[in-house]
Every structure is written in C-alpha cells, then in structure tokens.
Image 1 (cartoon, helix red, strand yellow):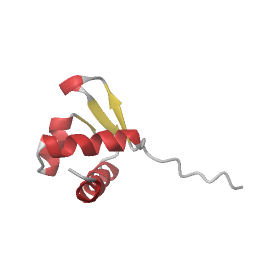
Image 2 (cartoon, helix red, strand yellow):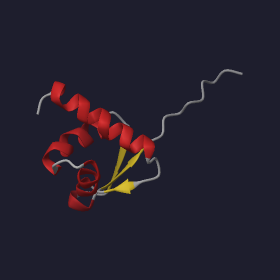
Image 3 (cartoon, helix red, strand yellow):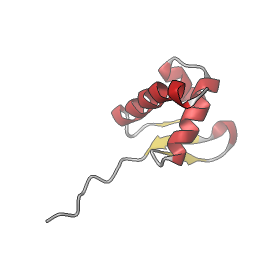
Image 4 (cartoon, helix red, strand yellow):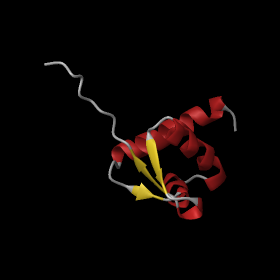
Length: 77
C-alpha cells in the first residue's frame, strides 16, 4: 500500500481515535471497528505511532494502541 492509498485510511483512523480519545485497542480491534483488514490497518497504525498520534503499549498481537491528545495550549498569556 502506498502513501496516496494510505492517506484516506490514516485520516479515517485518526478521526476514529479523536472521536474515542480514551479508547485502548489492539490492532485487530481497530481493524474490526473500522471494518478493515488487519493487513491494511497495520502500516497505517505504525505510521500514526511514528508521527506520535498514537502510543503503542506492549508488543506483538497483544499490543494496545491509544490516542495521544495534542497539546493545545499555545503558551500565550
């Protein structure tokens, strides 16, 4: 799967986590909730972890992913 195909799926996955910010889910669970195949979701989730939008807790099939809410404070007084 190349970047142009991944972009809509990245957006879908990101929006899903934004709408469910306290959810902790496995890769299989994410795929099931989005109605996608695990092999399609895997590279997208890895990219979102790399971009610090998701946090990965654990390893292997039992790894759990959660949304990292961006810091919205601007530092202005």
